[in-house]
Image 1 (cartoon, rainbow over the protein chains, first blue to last red):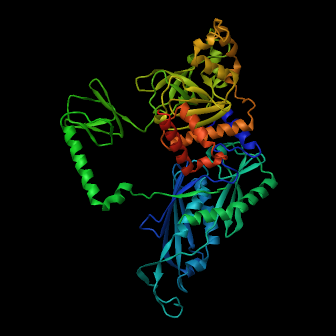
Image 2: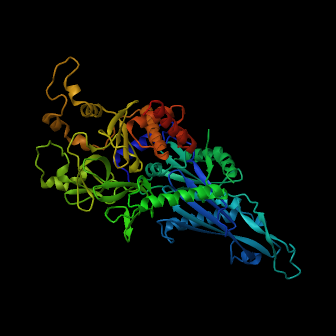
Image 3: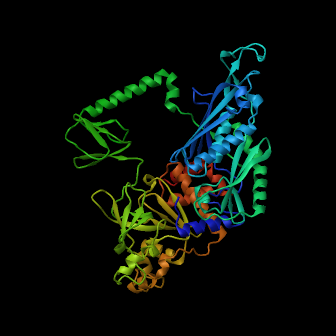
Length: 268
Length: 352
């Protein structure tokens, strides 16, 4: 996004005020409104779509596969696989690879093995396919919200064979049409932009463009989790972050995390 | 205070499809459609709104213009829009689509490229518009000759990303526009905030630069680019002169002052200093910044409700938005719909 010098300084000065005046009038802790669709892809186990007011759109599909637990223990396979495609970005660009590695690590750390476990020898593996159709701001929050909705609305085939297959070699068999809802806690990630001494949640493209720096903060089950790291929200004009602003941003996320989870749960 | 407002999507099926169970309705619609086709086959032209692929006329006498295609002697619409007829030329004007420049349009543009003696300007049209070095006021007055040094320091006047308001001077063969800023009311923009709406929503008016209540001004570019800014003295003067030249020339005392209604050459020279290309904003109070934000959200609400945008409607949407103390509320869909409804109702009551 390209801004003129006067425009940039107007936005920066507005956001520098106390309290900051955001270009769309939102408060420091207000998100852009989202529109959700859930469970519309027939061929996947779970799906969700979120549309933002600025036209950003993200679709997530969850698919599953039965794998042997031994392959995870030996490191040949992982419990969760994440694939991201963002319109206008190359698959092998560092931007995409960063997003994938962030999400992969957060999901494999916080999605519990027990929730996906089938029998003593077999477990489900989840494939999270993310498609960002259009985005104007840093897409990680949008992606994590959409994945949250999709994972919370994932239905896996019901196991009919015995859970204990240690003694007898037996392939797991499933019910013909009954599904079981996946019961898991899903982590989400927030984006905070830093402007002078102010910090704002969910920056839009203009706010990102003039921001000094950005922080992403993870949230899981009522607590702050890693990653807590800075992200590049624009090309150029990046400044260092004062340590107290990191603490304040974390406090901000703490104060609103639970209510975001509640709003997302209500959308199911 | 809402932190994250979530609304459920309407689903992916068309709403009509859900009513499919009601067979009576379907049959009625079908009859209507066939009857409609019969009327067109008489050789007359269908009026009002058409959708892509819809038969406009079967009369071969019409010349096919933009937005149409033909199979045999039948002319079909290739876009969704309204039919326009100029003599024997039949074309369909798309409802949505890129801005199509016309000579005389007052527009807002953003510099995309600096080239040889010209700037390329993004105006939201199919192609970039061209602003020649010769079509701008340079510091030092109108009567100054342009020299090579001007050519070399073009970036000092306007650089990539800069916003300017200008007028479409002429159109080239391919439909791209040539712009000019040869008036004091045109030029580089500062002291404000930029928003963009679909160009089809802009209501063409005599004047596109207005002062708004609350110390803000607006330039409603015909191309859908809108600039909201602080009202400074020269803006309010310019607005006054363009609004009622004669009224101000005859001042309150009944005297006629020569040149006070129009811009004299000397004033043009005085004001064509480097200041017109300044990038530095004036001091803007936080109240005014909030006002501008509220105006911006009101305009976005109008655009969301697909209501044509004119200065009267901006003001009435702004007044309707005052019901919400916090202008952050205005980003919600329901709030925007309420405001759009209030603007429409207000106009109905006033009989407009």
